[in-house]
Image (cartoon, rainbow, N blue to C red; front, side, top):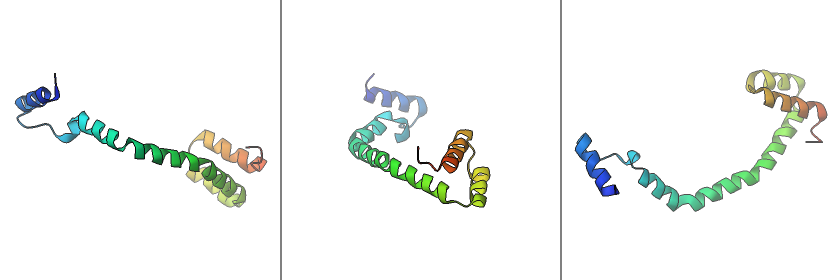
Length: 96
């Protein structure tokens, strides 16, 4: 069934043309049109991750004991993230 037939059947069944959010073709057209810019943004974010991770490690190392305790108890919910923060804090993060 081609797109024209699908649209015609939709109108016959529901009494109105399909909304644009139901049309996957519009989403695919948008992706095809903007895929290069999406890839560029993703690459720039990925390139910035190591620097951001280093900033977080440095901030964890420089926190006072009270700030670190508050950070662990209130801000970090994931057990793995807590373990990583403790490892960075205890080892100084030089080996990470």
